[in-house]
Image (cartoon, rainbow, N blue to C red; front, side, top):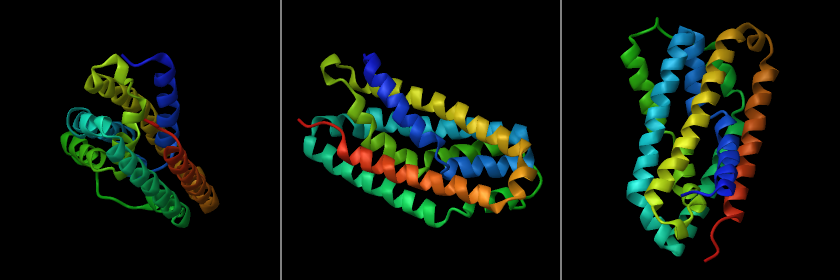
Length: 213
């Protein structure tokens, strides 16, 4: 199974990616501000389910193929790193988007199942998560231990537990601190700007690390 040092390293890298505001966070924040705490947490649950579908797709589909091919692994890793840098630059240039999420008006709250489904759709289509699972997840698999898909599923579970906690905090904070954020556009811009720089740094890290065999 996955060694403790790999698990801790993966958890740290996953935490760095998760806390950066991305499509899922913005969606959760928007739900929290428009519909309240319950809708936000329901959205987080759907989001997490959608993200784990991506984990399963990597673990049972492209993951083993990538794991066996150094060339494919390197190409995918570099493509993923480049995309993360692109997302970071985009987040920096559009750092005012968080303000839009906090001020966007939406219709009254809809049913819980529909909210769950919308959260699932955002989670399963999140490009940031796709890149992370496809390009980063295979790096933390210990091939000598075997059971590669099981290791990926375990690492993916760790990622989703961290995401569940982080996104829930974002939703709860958004529902409790709307007025404070709304009074200062600079606060929202700072969050988006720091997130963009962190994502650029993560992309560089992904490109510089990984298998050498």
